[in-house]
Amino acid sequence: MKTLGHWLASPWRRSAAATVVGALPVLAFPGPALWWWAWVALVPWLLLARTAPTWKRAAYDGWCGGFGFMLAMHHWLMPNLHVFTFVIAALLGALWAPWGWLVRRLLGGAPSAGRAAAALVVLPSGWLAVELIRSWEGLGGPWGVLGASQWQVAPALRLASVGGVWLLSFLVVAVNVAVAVLVAVRRARVPALAGLVATAAATSAAWVWSPRPGADGERAAIAVVQPGVVTGAAGPDRRFDREEELTRRLADRDLDLIVWGESSVGFDLDDRPDLARRLAALSRETGADILVNVDARRSDKPGIYKSSVLVGPDGPTGDRYDKMRLVPFGEYVPARSLLGWATSVGEAAGEDRRRGTEQVVMDVGDGLRIGPMVCFESAFPDMSRRLAADGAEVLLAQSSTSTFQHTWAPEQHASLAALRAAETGRPMVHATLTGVSAVYDAGGARIGSWLGTDASASRVYEVPLTHGSTPYVRHGDWTLHAALLILAAWAAAEGVREVRVRRSAPPPPAPPARTAHGSRARPGR
Image (cartoon, rainbow, N blue to C red; front, side):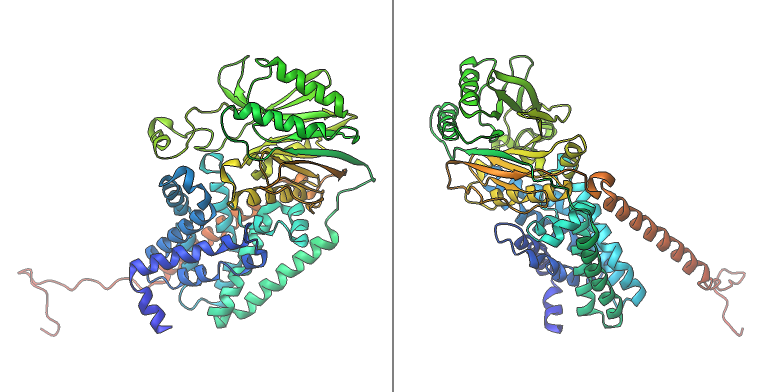
């Protein structure tokens, strides 16, 4: 330990260590998908921050760790954003600076059992505050929320139906804090063990008592069309031809809906009535409505929109959803007058896409109600929650991720649909152009197999429908509100304690008397 402490005495080595340990939690997400790793991945970061020699150094450890986490989580952006990826990671990483300070404040030195017990709720609350801030669309949205690493763990998904992905993040951080206390603070092992027991009890209680979505045996047959990578000249036309070919294979399958991926149609259907007629013919041939996604300049209003458009046997039905939350730099450049230079060093959007104004629930076929989202909107729990509350029976996300083939991004994106399904108690379809496409039932369990990034195919999924609502749909982001209240209560308690300490401290000694000539009086003379 002395050797390690000596090695970390160098600010540069300590910063490098903080960056590395901050990146460790990413191994819990797809592609590695080591979900169990999330429950201990923060321990090295916690142990490092608690031993910081000053509060400024602890805040810097938090910043470096946040930089490492953000860079590792978004490393697949480097071929597109280049050096700007590091800039984004550094800016977002700064959000963890107060968290690093908080770790040292609660666990630094030889904390009492009471202070360690407080850390079990205050540090997870601080982590949630960071996740809440960075979940703002303008900062990249809630991609890589720590609780999302548990997307394939059935008990965790049941907890998500109670408090959303935020409850999972809270519990994962709380367990990491408990493990760090067990490792480094002997006098506080009792509250640490109590915290672990409480987490296990909460999980067990949610498993037994949380309401399950009601099912009456009704199913919807939904097909996903994934054309695969289409490159070269006339790409949008060639992609449409491939999607048309794959859709024709679905004839006589008694389908309720066919879903194409994001940007599956590269032209406004009013400008290309020939494409609208071809889609209507496909709908008649397959006996199902087709949900396409148009990425084009609209003929009825200025600007480029990404829109989910429903097409029936007579053509577009009039149901349309315009994407509301856009990908920073990918679909628009924030503060373009200041950051427009990003287009010269990467593949940032040359022209900003336009935003939609409201979410839409569409009626399909025999009364099936669907709630569409586009691309990374599936990362936002509030959007799927709103659609479920508005009556959607099936959630849909049309995505692409074709830019990020052979990276961790497609699997990370597909995994988010499992969480949205579990949170809302509604099955969810994640349909992409190039993979990974996936379908999940109302509990977040996968239906059938994924369509991977090497697939160019159409596949039919029998999706069980459910009724009723989950506690998360009814009560919303109560976990976040509770975390903010915990932080406020702790800050108030610390303020009161500081006042009491100052009042009880002995008054400073009076300055020595001075002689008539201005020199200090000498005692005894």
